[in-house]
Amino acid sequence: MSSTFEDLGIAPSLLKGLYDMGFEAPTEVQTMAIPHILNGEDLIVMAKTGTGKTAVFGVPILQLTDPEAPGPLALILAPTRELAVQVDSDLKLMAKHVRHRTTAVYGQHSMNTEIQALSKGATIVTGTPGRVFDHICQRNLKTQHIRFLVLDEADRMLDMGFMDQVRRIIKTIPKNRTTLVFSATIPPDIRKICRDNMKNPETIEIESRTMTVDSIQQKYYRVRENEKNAMLHRVLMMERPDSCMIFCNMRVTVDRVQNFLVKQGYDSRALHGDIPQEKRLKTLQQFKDGKFSLLVATDVAGRGIHIDDLSLVINYDVPNELDNYVHRIGRTGRAGSGGRSVTLVTGEDIMSLYEIEEHIGCLIEEAEFPPEAYLNENRAAIDKWMQDHARKITPAPPPPKSKPKDGQQKRSRSQSRQSNKRSNDRLPTAAPGAETPQLTVVPPSQPNIITKNTHNAVPITAKDRQSPAPAAEETTTFQENTGKVSFLQRLLDSIKGKKKK
Image (cartoon, rainbow, N blue to C red):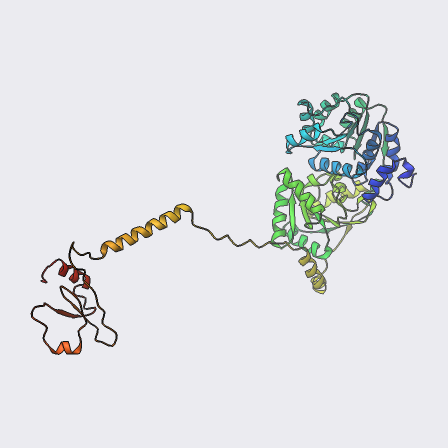
């Protein structure tokens, strides 16, 4: 068995890309399968997820195709959008030091963007069956030059009902090609497709059923259904993972668990089929980049998604299908590295757990929750971990100062002019040719008495009060604020020559 990638006959430019990705030595499936593909043989590979299958077909295809030749030269079919994007991303990294162009096509993605990418020429196209078939029907994707056809996660495509589209796609591809099928299991329908569309395929089966789980520390806790959330919170405080995926069986459960974690202050996100595709891809990329630490998901994210250094997988629900347990915990302990998994098991789930143990060929350890004293003793570490993984809340910026609109400014000016006009209308006006009366206010040192006459108003001094007023003038004195008749009304009546009644 080859111990290095050089021993497998891989070109130096591709070796450099593999080493840049962090590959050090080939895995078992890579060692067994890559030489057959480099020899141009059809191949059926039965291996669990997480064994490095993308490199098994990606490296030989990149090495055996000419990037300058009319394309596409290879077509890879994947069951989910997430897997298609992941495979294309890995191929781009492998092709970092070569001139190949790759692209991905999948549902709920811009058709125009995909058409432009296909028109520029791509050596390798990865896509979901439905979108690939749409492009073929619209003649955006030309298949006459395809030399490699890959069915990745074939059993999953069968489960999702894509086999009819897969058969139609295969009919459009030249028969003179290399066909590669990767599947965890080979049910009868998949075996028939292989028999009808492959030329003397070699079958490689990784015998160890536990190769993707034997390096993972697995344990389970018995819980009641109504205490699952509280026990999930306790598991997180005990394990304190740097990154964690929490798997649920149903979308509604994902939303409920996500809401609980948010209320507890965790920085977490949800991922399931009801979330728009663009947001799902963005969420997954942010999780890979370490922007947040907890991802709650259904099994839509359980297969074919590579996440580096995932610390912990929690099965909030025991999976309904046996293989899904392997696919879930396979997100941690990738390619033989260590990992941890925890499963919450209710009384109704215990028989399903026994079936999983039989399926993977090993026993899962039952663990007991530690007493409250353990949490108290580790309170400082728990508080620090929770603070490091708390939800970041960005304060909302202060609202901008609103400026009055033009119409409001105009109305304000108009209202001001009208107000001034009304004020002016209330002031008395003299008749044409009449002398405008003058008002004189008594200084503070003098008595607060004002006199009004038909000509001028003058202050009354102490001497004036001792002498009678001239008979020629009709003089009226009054105290301010008497409240009988307003001064302005009396002045107006005086101007108009009216006599006081």
